[in-house]
Amino acid sequence: MQSEKQYIDLYSENREMIMKHSADVLNRVRDKAFEDFKSQGFPTKKVERYKYTNIPRLFAPNYGLNLQRLDIPVNPAKTFQCGVPNLSTSLYFVVNDRFYDKQLPKAQLTGGIIVDSLSHAAQTQPELIAKHYAKIAETGKDTVTALNTMLAQDGLFIYIPENVKAGRTIQVINILRADVDLMVNRRVLIILEKGAEADMLFCDDTADDLNFLTTQVIEAYVGDNARLELNCLEETHAKNVRLSNVYIEQQRNSSVNHNVITLHNGVTRNKLDLVFKGEGGECSCNGCVIADKEQHVDNNTVIRHDAGHCTSDQLYKYVLDDKAVGAFAGLIYVAKDAQKSFSHEVNQNLCASKTAHMYSQPMLEIYADDVQCNHGSTVGQLNDAAMFYMRQRGIDEREAKLLLEFAFVNEVIDKMQLIPLRDRLHHLVEKRFRGELAKCQGCSLCR
Figure 1 (cartoon, helix red, strand yellow):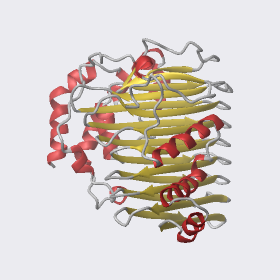
Figure 2 (figure 1 turned 180 degrees about the vertical axis):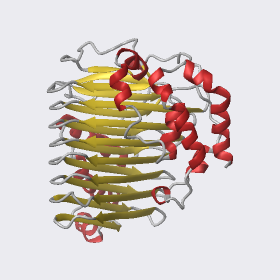
Figure 3 (figure 1 turned 90 degrees about the vertical axis):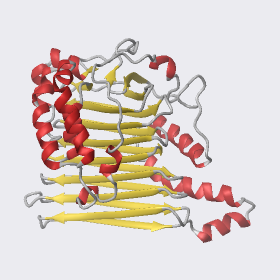
């Protein structure tokens, strides 16, 4: 219990300070989250959903926290000057866990769309925030979510009103910035009302070569006939530990396309819980992982078909080299009354070295009888016949290997609906396989 004790002591000793620098809506659930954290403790590898990542070890080091909400000396608009060519975005920044409001996009989103600090929105829209905050992200069911809820003081709020279509992609750059090793607890609340539509891109970057520990909880509510594309791209560094829990609730005839891409990292664990609450919903959940050296990437998903006539599709692909470790565990749950459900789950993995390790565990739990559900998993190495074919045509071994790896992950990238983003990622992935950082002129993050 040593790892838990430092956080229990931290909260007990600093509870008043944490609440003083946060909003009432966030504070209302804080003590319950603390009690849930104490009762659960950090999950060991004996806990099914955490069996592939050593959570207590990740939280054992002593990180600093900015509980007094001191200003961080950074201008992200100058630090981050690159973008996705030909993709018109409304660009926002979150520095550590604080929404950067000193410089907002010139092209403001219209139609009543809100992109704001969660703390500020809790003051201007208290009933809306209280109705949704910490509701699907239940602290009694997950320790990391409980820890995040008891410590998070701010975050990001995105609201798309009924029948409003965001004409521009909402791009959020999460920048980690500190002078000492730092723990960041980031919160995101996304609400799409009936008939709303939005495309979002979240990019995680680091501005300093320090040890960072980030917990992130995203809650996304997608109303009747609404459409959300949520893309999450991580390009951090080897000293970064990132635990992201995404909770999505879909209503009748809604559509979600969720894509998570890990290009550079240290230790990453992405947890996705998606539930169909109304009939006719569709979701496409995809992941692409490129890891080498001693990087660790663990994706864990649960898709719940609690309503009938819904369709879910999952495709996760990993390319692992050197001593990298990858893990994928995905559960498709179909409730008794969720007839006419369709689900397809695939995890395909390529180990480019004999020292890379991949753990794969696709699962089905079905209680309805009129369904079409299937899953599959493969772990293999580069195709010797294809390598030989290219070598015979004058392509050297290294280039042939890169071409095969690039072709392998392209299927995931092509699942994205935003074509300019898709093209940009093809470029980033190619440079990643070549051992290069995608350097953008004038961007200090790409060092």
